[in-house]
Amino acid sequence: MTSRIGSVLVTGIGELATVDGTGPEGLGLRHDAAVLVEDGLVAWAGAPSAAPAADRRVDVGGRAVVPGFVDSHAHLVFAGDRSAEFAARMAGQRYDGGGIATTVAATRVATDDELDGLVAARVAEMRAQGTTTVEIKSGYGLTVADEVRALRIAGRHTRETTFLGAHVVPAGADRSAYVAQVAGPMLAAAAAYARWVDVFCEPGSAHAFDADEARTVLTAGAAAGLGLRVHGNQLGPGPGVRLAVELGAASVDHCTFLERADVDALVGAAATTTATLLPGVEYSTRSPYPDAAALLRAGVSLALATDCNPGTCFSSSMPWVMALAVREMGLTPAQALVAATAGGARALRRTDVGRVVVGARADLTVLEAPSYLHLAYRPGVPIARALDL
Ligand SMILES: N=CN[C@@H](CCC(=O)O)C(=O)O
Ligand SMILES: [Zn+2]
Image 1: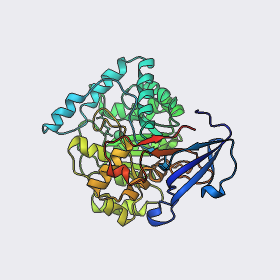
Image 2: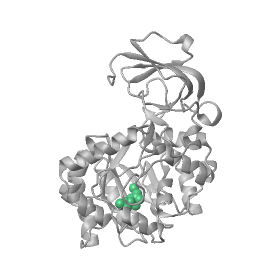
Image 3: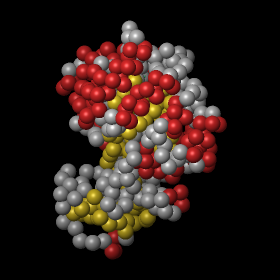
Image 4: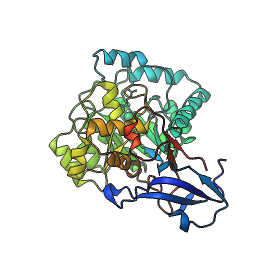
């Protein structure tokens, strides 16, 4: 049954993490709970004995329920395979963004139907692991037509579409002419299909963009009505984080190499800019993990996302990302869950997802477990799935 029409009472919830900001670590934990869903929205949550009547009931048999995960950073519109690049990295090669050209070539020759099928399969794979909201970027087209095509396809699967024409300078292109194209005709064509604009800002890289180039694209994107996101401080210290804060970006992602001034900027901008950490990338590129616990203690707004892409992290698993954040970045399991749900929602400036509260979308994820603790406790085990109502 997948219809969202009418009312459904979800019963038998052994543990409900509402992530409503109350209680220890803001988890809003309830034991033995029920949730009333009306027309796809949460209408009530509480003790089963006080539950209102509903058209039908779904019993989850004592399992734990958490908000559907909000994966606020993913590159799903691509074709081709780069597993050999991963193997080379595990043997010591460094990631520098050069492999993106391989994916661009494979993506350009794929048909619309092929790309759409690939995206659909990846979104389904995410949902089967508990993700109910996903952001999808373009960035493997790098021509006006190919970027627009990627965004049109992405838009069939999510409303969180991001124009990433400034992913890398395409092979053979003149750098300043390409930046002008991205900020000019490419943006003009892409804006109708995108909610966000993003830039890979990494001045040390031959492939990505420096602060001035990133600023050009981001300010043009803002003028076109798009919200801002930045890939920053992935390959080394740099200006990405401070540029994102200065321009009021919703999110700056990676944050692998942060300096004191970056952390100060993120703390000052916590109401506006979320730092989205992508520990699957540190895993898949053998990079150091940022100290997420220290960032939280300092007062930074934090999200966790997969960055699912063929180069730096080909995983669609938010539970695995949470497990890494706990084991390698110092978060408690509760902090990891908050960052993967309400944190991701904040990074997308959404208030209707990431929490199980009245009025929010009834995006519920069921765990084959008695507690949310199992998300980090049982890495690699497929215990999470989005609940179809
Ligand atoms: N760093 C830039 N973009 C992606 C990697 C893309 C790729 O290598 O294909 C990322 O977020 O890590
Ligand atoms: Zn990315």
